[in-house]
Image 1 (cartoon, one colour):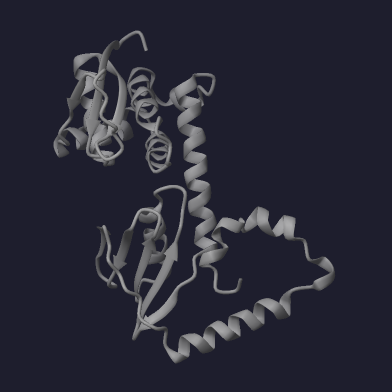
Image 2 (cartoon, rainbow, N blue to C red):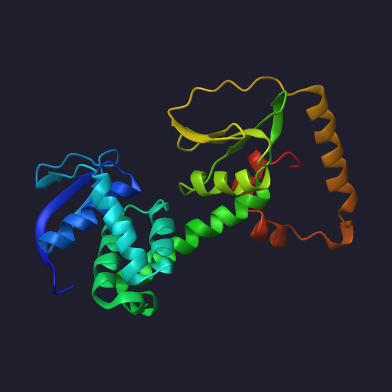
Length: 251
């Protein structure tokens, strides 16, 4: 990263992907790279830090977004977005370095796994994407009202939005709520539009009689298809980790 001068500054931003793309824009123009990048929500005050609060600029973010697609690759955007959804506290600086280097050399950046920040971004992408893929199969909706479905999850990574988009494609005619209880945020879909709400106060009503029946049927099906002689808890936990069991109807 010899094209960018390292400066002893900590960048604070609003924790959004557009906020991080704004930082990429500012770093590219100024040819500087901060020592740390952290969201305001996660920042712990430190008298030794030299702070610079970066305000999210949608136009700057959009220029970087389009620039990635045009000058680097869709795969780069894909890697960086899912790495951003990971719970790593070191993701921001690695993503910014990845993108700045990508603007210099183009699509080749995606193959340069010997570079530490390239490897880190793709490793974080793999973790977040893997959990998202796993929850597409493990998420369980329950009926809490007429044509209204609710699911609770406890993911390690902030994958609520891509998970919600998956179920919009699967259930386009249903109203549903996916509630991330680890972050207290909810994805709400009403068959037309969706929103993501933060600091959600949600009292889930008692499930309907029909839902009780369906749960009994599902548990009975789950037990019926199981082959006692081939029971393998170790293999089961590999595909259905125990940390997700509290959100499963059949456990």
